[in-house]
Amino acid sequence: MKIEETYIEALKGQKFLLLEDMEEFVKKTLGAYDAYAERGTVYAVMKRGDKEEIEIAYSFYDKNYHLEV
Image 1 (tube, rainbow, N blue to C red):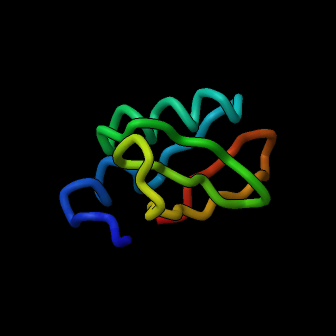
Image 2 (image 1 turned 90 degrees about the horizontal axis):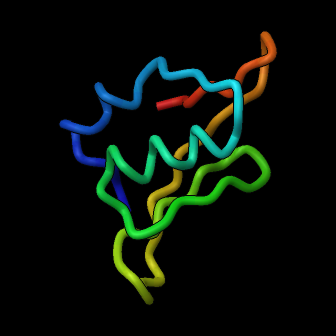
């Protein structure tokens, strides 16, 4: 599933001290049911029971998590 253009600007350049904060930000920004991070990717589940997920890459450097949109 692709991210809509309107959300890309909101996600671009964001950095977080905690992984949980990044997950919560992605969840709120996309209006997702749930979001979780695993092995360099944040997965956003848009609807409960939905098998399709939005995948957003992230990296860790300078003691922060950075979204790579």
